[in-house]
Amino acid sequence: MNTREEIADFMYNRLLKHKEELSIQFHSSSESIGYFIIDDLLPDNIAERFYTLFPTEDEIVKRKNLREYKYVAYEMNKYHTLLEEAIYAFQDEKIVHLVSEICSLNAIYPDDFLYAGGLSLMKKDNYLNPHLDNSHDRDRNRWRVLNLLYYVTPNWALENGGNLELWNKGLKNSPITIQSKFNRLVVMATHQKSWHSVSKVNIDKTRCCISNYYFSDQPLSANDTFHVTTFRGRPEKKLKNMVLTLDSGIRGWVRKLFKKGIRENPHQYKK
Image (tube, rainbow, N blue to C red):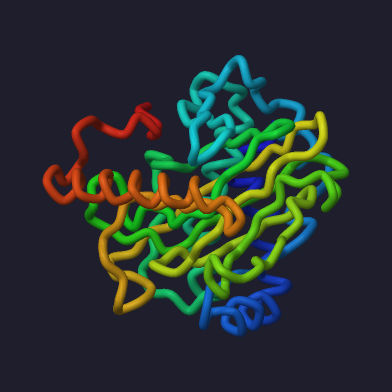
């Protein structure tokens, strides 16, 4: 049984070994959407164990609408304890501090409530449309600044789909595609221009991801303003884009009137 401390130690040593090159990756891309990628984050047997313990689609929450089609889990006490240990290993103080140094950020904080974080599972035909993450934490006290995505499905090929897409040149241009490769961690900046998506899964296999967000007292960009999770259609889906633009506008207007929305967002871990 691996504890979060043991998992964090593995992560820390791997990140520290490649700290300089990861920092170069992040800062060389930071004019649009800063990000870095590190493969083989953990010993393969540990990453494979995470995958085998992932809940099935019958055990977690399905989200299917014009915005997205995927499955999520955040009430971690319902699942194997190792999955909770994995998620909170990313919130270990030394990991948070090291990632903050890589990205040259001051005073960043993990999210114990897993607001919009946790586990995500995507099967054939699942997708996530281009979107901006909600700008804040659940109480609108801190700014969301980093998204950490750790992929654990063995032998996941690029042609399988279900890959991360960064629309670093805007939604009218082609995105950067980052393969959801086994045992790969992607850390990306979240701000007012960090449009990203997940391409449709093409095969009858499950893509599993462990995700965390880090927050800060200050936004990444001085021009950032509060916004709800904002979806758009892909460039070729013009009608869907119009509908999603209207949808995001309405939800944003509601949040201006009601700071925490009309109802509490259920996507949080209430221990």
